[in-house]
Image 1 (tube, rainbow, N blue to C red):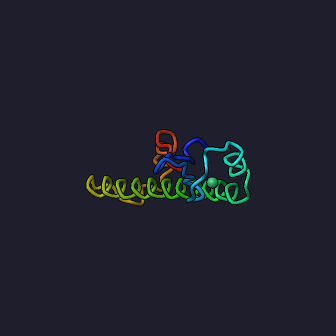
Image 2 (image 1 turned 135 degrees about the vertical axis):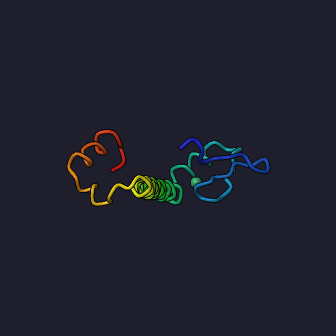
Image 3 (image 1 turned 90 degrees about the horizontal axis):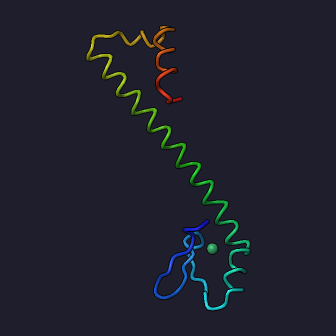
Length: 98
Ligand SMILES: [Zn+2]
């Protein structure tokens, strides 16, 4: 993970572990990367990224639904039309929102 480390106050700071790492000795940095704490932080971080992506997809879907309802009601299209096969086929063909 390339952006895990940043230089802060002339020290290397691990964003994942929220801890400073002594960069003067390379073996200390290597040991930090291999440490259980850092590995666990990588694991947690990747889980958090997956959760954030799920929320993004959920928000995207909600926005789509809100816009769809606004579009349909303002054009006097009955909301039941979403159950129409042609209607659904059109959206599944042209909209990549699942
Ligand atoms: Zn770390």
